[in-house]
Length: 292
Image 1: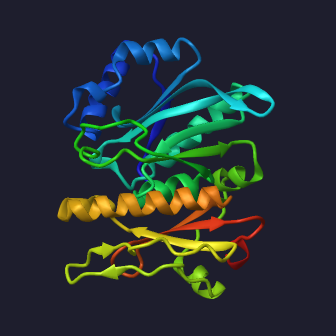
Image 2 (image 1 turned 45 degrees about the vertical axis):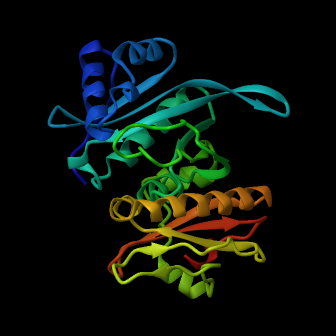
């Protein structure tokens, strides 16, 4: 892993670097940049901006702030992790994990136990970090969470998102963030279990994956739901197909959550050429952990 220094960002000078990094990560829409004055206001009122520096160059950041959530027992505090960005030149270097681990440490010092954030469920790399490596879970699907987005990564597709729950004081999370983290699942674990994806993908001659026409019935307590291994590449080649995937996975996960399934893990395997990404959906106490 690259030599990374993680530190709190609190000065206007360094906040301006965060503004610039947002433009590199989400190009094309100045109105989507969180401005310096909002970042400063947040950190002066319990928020956190953490930066990942490589040789004093800002390579990544994570930004969040305190929030309130409704529960059956009344309102309770949480931390809302609003945004994380890694410079395109420094992806796959462990920066995202390092930033989230630092956030985990800082939020625990604020005596909070719950962090939430959203991400596009069709992005396998994000799912791998958020679910497999960090130990977040998901029971909430939000349609068009941010309306029509205009940046280069999101424009043209409904901004559907998972809202994640990161229960930061649980053994599940601590085991993933320890010095000897729990290994992530791979396809050979699935093969040993005998479990198969509960629907098949059709792959075209140009190696693009097509979703099924209909969401299959939910008949088992442990299910594997496959998504494109590289959705951004698929979207760049066939935008109409990307929309098909959005609407298929919308129906899939809304149905799953209505039936009390939970997203508990993610398999991202690149050992067989093209990457494959599969969500693990569990109902009750079902788990794949015994096959690790």
